[in-house]
Amino acid sequence: MKKPVVGIIMGSQSDLRIMKEAAEFLETVKVPFEVTVVSAHRTPARLVEYATKARGRGLKVIIAGAGGAAHLPGMVASMTSLPVIGVPIKSSNSIDGWDSVLSILQMPGGVPVATVALDGAKNAGILAAQILGTCDDTLAGKLDKYKEELQSKVEESVQNILKKGWKSS
Image (cartoon, rainbow, N blue to C red):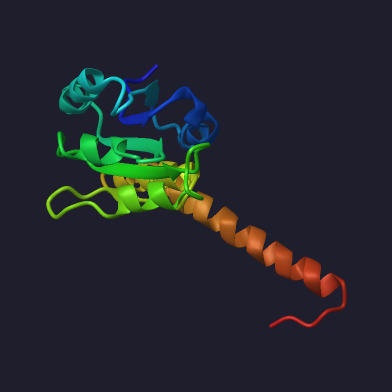
């Protein structure tokens, strides 16, 4: 197997139900990745080691999912110059997910975290692939094909509506 270029991390194993969508997308476009649990609050030394050694291990993008206070993406971003994509997760102790969204979205100047929608791990996987695709024409071609498939699905939906005899524009 190829060396991972995307790291997918999450604050607890319970977040895997959401974060697996990033992994599944990366599998479809054949981007090698790794998945692990790194808690900003329960394993701070592991967090520091992961973030500071990520580039040296060959990672190019990190996807970090977290719920509640959601410090993981920002803390990782503070320790690496790699792009970090934050996935806010609606957890059991969450305030409808808004606490996670705002914790990841409202980063201070100098410590950016790209933030996707609440529970939006698939979009994080797509964004990671798009970042990598800027320097990889083969991957960019796979992403172009994926976008064309999305377009075809919408066009198919329009045709299904028309088959019912309803007007559409």
